[in-house]
Image 1 (cartoon, rainbow, N blue to C red):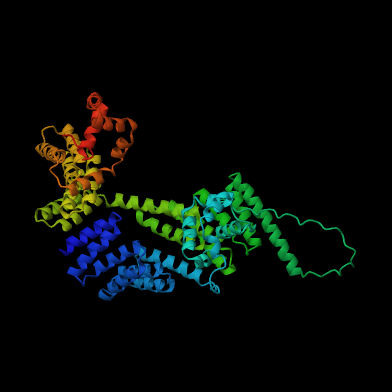
Image 2: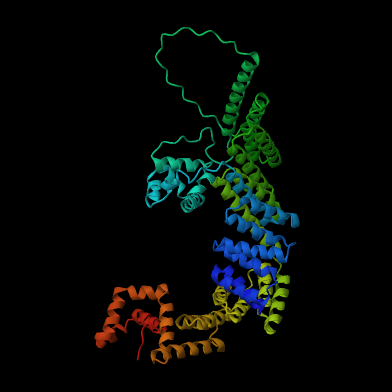
Length: 575
């Protein structure tokens, strides 16, 4: 019973039905109150609903029951972070990593918690944030849409999430003031022109930075004042200025060579610039960009590491640090040959995002994670092991151990995701467990992989029948007969559906059941389209007021099909 409730909870969680998942996990906990995994799973469900207090209580219980289980500390960290306690979250993730240093989920959680803690270490405001009121009211989004700069930001999911977070808690604005987009937003909302960032590269694409020319200050009219005494400039200062000027010229020459794809010459100029001025890491990041274009990925990574290390010593702009880390991650992706090779690249992109949340870096991170997952599936693929797991699942199904059978079928699909038989078998398990939406999804996948496999249609039709969607079940069985005309199970299914539809027409079902069927049918887009079609509405009126005209309508095959659809769904009754 415990495993059955747990399996139902897992299925509901996977389908995004978190309230149902909590209910099933709670039932399982009542049966096995010392099972730490159940508390961990329920904590995750609570966190998904942003009920962090409840998530924290379950996470603490998990750690209490199993203090040497790293995953429990991940749940604890997530709950603390959801409640805004980044310090406690950091401690929890660090404890989990002591137990399991290779756990990627804990590493990512710790990175997020540290970033939140770093933002929150800014001096707290006295009382409420003075900007709090400007983020309230419906006119906020109208103003952001009207301004051409902030209008582009609205296409960025992280920006929208940031604004929504501030609307919920205006004091959270202090966490985002380091983001240049936030300064632009404040300027728009206050009707004040805010200064934008300067001397930045246009994008994260690996192109060398180039100094923007500074506008000359406007010349004032000469004032009649005494001639100042000439000031003696130290030789060291003079030499330093001259070296910086020469370094900038070398950098400009390097940029020009890069644009011409004369990479060797560009490297020479950037190297000379570094020798003249070691106080600017842009020369290093530019040279790294050249190495990246040349396919010299190891040299690129070395330059990026030097840029990050030296940049921290110089307290360089965090965007420059992020740029170096992003280039390093790009080089690591180029070097990746297996799924394991993507891990350092993903970690590097995550570090870059903690320095500066740039959309290009985020896209590179998502691409790397997707590539890693695809390679893992390819590396894990093994049809022979998949068959073994399927057979184990079949044995457990015969013993009515459905949750355990689901586990083996799932493993079989990981090993061979193209086997329709496994989807069919797992759909049968889900049906026995009452997880009908999950079973329906597996049955549809089975049909997608092999449209001629009759089992897929019998599984799907049976599930739709149990869901009292007799019209849909009838269509499924009929479609299956096109591929297997002599299949007795499909024919029996059709007879059962027709019998239920006829019961409805004869009024042999309860009022509650009829209302339930009609309510379900009204959610079907096809039914909605039929009922909103002006022609069909006139047909239905004629059925009530003009039987002769109604008989003429039935001669039209399309109208007849739609009427049958409404009858099968229980919307219209023919007596």
